[in-house]
Amino acid sequence: MVKSIIALVFFACFGAAVAAELGVKNLQDNSPDQYTVVKGDTLWAISGRFLKEPWRWPEIWGMNRDQIKNPHLIYPGDLIVLDKTGGRPSLRLVKKHKLQETVKLSPTARSEDLSQKSIPSIPPSAIEPFLSQPLVADQEWLNSGPAIVATQEDRVVIGAGDNVYALGMPENESRFWQIFRPGKPLVDPLTKETLGYEAVYLGEAKIVKPGDGITPTTLEVIKSNLEITVGDRLFPAPPASFTTYAPHAPDSQVKGRIISAYGGVAEAGQNAIVTLNKGARDGLEVGHVLAIHRDPESVKLRARSFYGNDASQKKPEHDFKLPAERYGLLFVFRTFDRVSYALVMQTNRNVNVLDLVQNP
Image 1 (cartoon, rainbow, N blue to C red):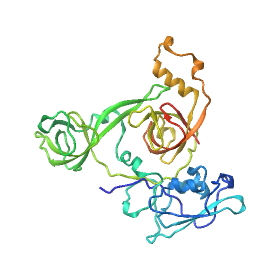
Image 2 (image 1 turned 30 degrees about the vertical axis):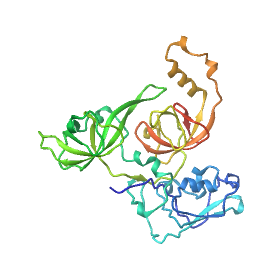
Image 3 (image 1 turned 60 degrees about the vertical axis):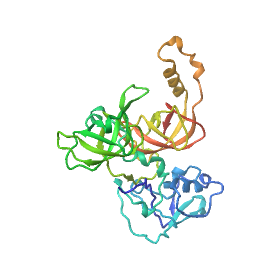
Image 4 (image 1 turned 135 degrees about the vertical axis):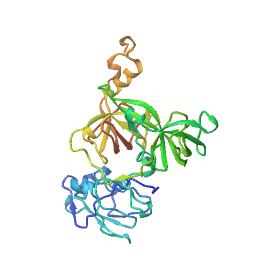
């Protein structure tokens, strides 16, 4: 399987792309006049060399909406030049890559071989496991996959290198399968609506010996993140993919909540994965940047979760009054209908479940 990355890449503008919204005051105090891209860079980190708000780099390129969804590639060796004349900064890209060619991309999922070495927008290792796994599903989907009905030597739990046996495997499907277990429901803290169920990714397996409808299919577990047991479900492993979007604010007003942090923790930090109670139906898309706020309502919601509904057990309302305060940024990298996954890009404090997210 081709190993993939999130290749969030920028429009290669050879003319002066002037962004009226950004002025010299938006530049870093020590912003360089030029920068040569090197292996290991990310677009977010490169942007931070020039701008106080790295996610606004598409503006300084003068990118329109189509270009945000259909940018060109930036490679190690390319030279980025900053022009600060006239009080309105602009960037231009001088292509140095020896394999430079005209590339036409569309805003759809694509696979990219790492040998091409284009610069990703954010650290790929932080989100790669989340790109090819469903993660959020309904109960019907979770119950539709072939089930593991037996384990090697009737072990209670197994891991990599062990065999499992499954019934209901379709013919002529992929040889490689992912293993899931239904997880906790994702509930909107305000409306109490169940937005979906987390599909807990357990690992991967490959078919060793096909079944015949009566005899189970034999599979070897080739990767195990968690213990695997009877009753876990199998789904064909899709190719990993990326979507070519540059960071940008939502077109419409978005106001949501962080409803969980990966690993089930109550607090998260920079480079953590969090789940939002807003998704595609709310206008969120890959590449959207949202600000994280701590506000009085999020503190009261956490208190209500802790103390329950018994009013006699709640502390006085004024104990939870805090001023609303922005303290970080999220980058949305995967969306479902009613929820989204985002990477914490910047934060100056712990990120709490139920904190507010909204337009930056």
